[in-house]
Length: 442
Image 1 (tube, rainbow, N blue to C red):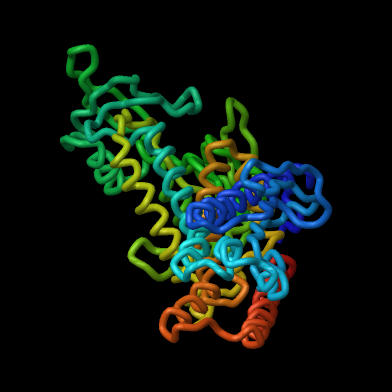
Image 2: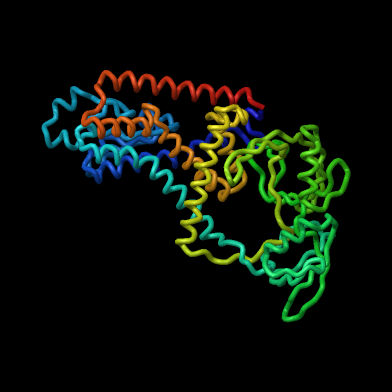
């Protein structure tokens, strides 16, 4: 494992991690705060971080907003809470009159307490949906018409189409929508160039241009072999171990056949030719239909020698996409956890704080769009984790509220202390296990 990321210095990694975590924690805790306030529950403290207070102010509602010195979490302390985990301060509650007791977390009606607890994870999910939706809304989606949009920067000897060209045929096979370009290219033998029939400036013509599915690095996965070797978005892989390649699938096949042995890649990067040696890694990949498959990967995705035109997406369609993407992260996370428990995939897939920090820094180093996307994914994961039925977490509190709803009374204070101790022990054990993965997993 790259214990300290190789993309830059440690300070950048820590800063990216703190920024991502602080945003997600703020959203989560604000969900608790605002729904609690709407439900008539008074928040005494809203804190980002723990420990000594660096900055604070008290608002007109009597809530102290603060930033603390240890920025690895946060909490909302409601009236009557003994601590940041919403433990009950019995003496303080007994000293309250009936009106004030209604404003405490433990004296409020069951519906108000349950809504306040659930609001944290729900706000995380809403935040993720809005980010995914905003990305699609701003960037648009590929248009169905097979028209060339932005051109990919390529070596000068690789001929290209022109922006605005409407592709009518590829290697003599008719093209009616952009997906046909991908389908036809998948069936063609990789070669330096192909004949395109295009409509350009009102005329139909045949032009020679680069293979559509070139070995382009469209994105680099954090904590991957490609990232460790320094591959960058926009790199064009020209050869593997000295053998020229013209299609991304040749790279994919070579990585699979190498089975973990080193590969030397010849790369074109912004006019320069460089050589990079890397070692493919066995990786567990989530499948769209559920489950996982294990493959040898270097951690890059491919792209086209040109981009399709993009069309605007309405806000409702974008939000639908955001919900689908958030649901995919939830399903993949639950599937991954189940497959780790059953031993179907490696438990090394569970990351701890060091792994998440590395991924934060890696995403930030690849641009603000990648970093924002990572924050959305992490927000979904945090919301899901907090719904697990573990005492101390929001899910554990919701289980206690469900018990109260069925029996008509909450668990006793003694039982709650035992459950909280058990939950905290389990949570710390999981964190220690994940941290061990960060240190010892390859």
